[in-house]
Structure formats: C-alpha cells, structure tokens
Amino acid sequence: SNDLATIDQAIQLYRLDNGTVPTGLDSLKSDYLGGQAELKDAQGGDFSYAATDSNTNYTLSGKNSKGEDVVSPGSKATDAVVTEGENK
Image (cartoon, rainbow, N blue to C red; front, side, top):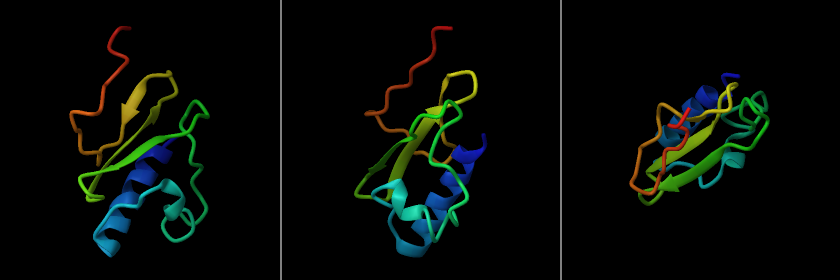
C-alpha cells in the first residue's frame, strides 16, 4: 500500500497550512486525506506517528508488505527513533 507516502504528504501540507505538524494522524482525515487513506500500514497495523521538535517535525513509520519497518520520506530522524529490522 502507498498510504505511508500519502499520509507523509498530508502531514507536510498540514505543516504548510498551520506552521506545525498535527499532534495525531486523526487531524488529517477529513481535510488532508479526504477520508480516502486508511490509517493502516501494509500489514494492517497502525502507523507509528510522533510529533517532535515542538510539533515542527515528525516521525511516521509502519511495516511494508514484507513486514519490514519503513520510515516515511518526510520523517526527521531523531536519536529517539530506533531503526529495527536490520537482521534479515
């Protein structure tokens, strides 16, 4: 599913409009996603989302169809984010 990229773009649009990122993904549903995107990753699990840096940046991650952890392109990596799934 391409919903990770779709949600990623919606977060960036939200930030352009509001000057901050949303505190939760539910804020995006009507205005930015038009109710189209499922807030689920390719494995059917919930995306992991966290606003960082006083709500100016964020990390968004989920699992791809292979069950590997993927982080959205717009996520700003912070030291708090642990990247897993290196051992294949």
